[in-house]
Length: 317
Length: 92
Image 1 (cartoon, chains in turn brown, yellow):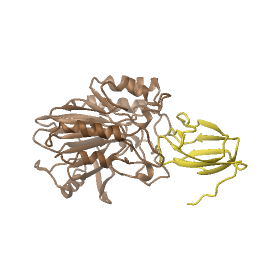
Image 2 (cartoon, rainbow over the protein chains, first blue to last red; image 1 turned 45 degrees about the vertical axis):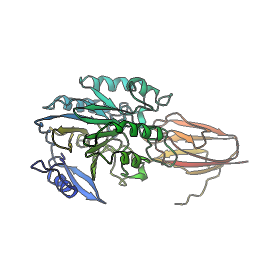
Image 3 (tube, rainbow over the protein chains, first blue to last red; image 1 turned 60 degrees about the horizontal axis):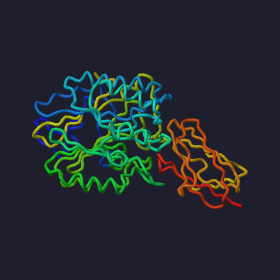
Image 4 (tube, each protein chain N blue to C red; image 1 turned 45 degrees about the horizontal axis):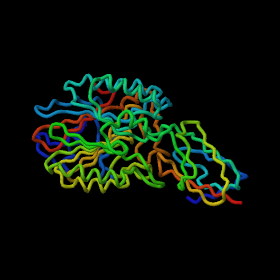
């Protein structure tokens, strides 16, 4: 569990944010490595989010990889079902879900169908962005766009407003360049500049995309080449929250007005940067898997600029 | 780490393992059929930088073959994980 707010609700500066993460040790223990808070591990069960008196919550799920059946988790369908079960059991129902990509493992029709049945079966509105595993059908992404592209531009980017918060879903998994990282591209950046023109600087902005929009570990491709251009467009806003998936572990960084956060997968964990020969699926001892899979609940509280981000694992209550 | 290019007589197979093409640099004669085989638990797509060849998504254990009919250097990468790169050098 991590909060970005002091115990009395006052905004916290960077130093205090880091202290707060250490204090909030019921879910995740944080340390600071090279200026980046890194999750060391989970300390027992994560607490459920305290219901805000005003405002709303939304929920992020990510990297469900329906179709994955290798040693790291032969039952990715079951763990997605468990994750959705946790969402349905939340004391305060989220207003909607966002899915930050890798819905499927191989972009097949049956994998998309299974994911839609499980996720859609919970009865929430879901806003998707694709991961690189969702655009590898024979028509290079048409399968995703046919299902989730209505109202979206280009490869599937869009924005919407909810309760005074501006949400932007970006796509950084198409037209990747040799030797490069994630990529937004000129068309999407031009659209983003235009989209943000009508949004006042006091409006909280939530940006979500599959690959992290900050350079977590370029050696494994964990970053986005032209993210700096997108972040420059977001500089004038008082509160920006960037939610990503792709790396199957919690990472967080607070930089000025921007809070970056990556979510757990519901399918399988991946190693911490540089701790394994590759970023491939990490097989953990039996009994530990559900400590490393989970969901992210985000509370938007009226009168507060920053959003409270609470991660909980499948093993937590 | 410098890698000694292998000759076509030594290998016409590029193994994809741990998000790496092995051998990273491979030299073959014109007309050689090269097989790219994915041993990872994550799919990869082999694509030439000049667009001259592109595999489907290769799931675990899947292979892709391409016959190199022109001499020259053919750099390629993974379309899903573009930090993965290799080169096929084709000689007469």
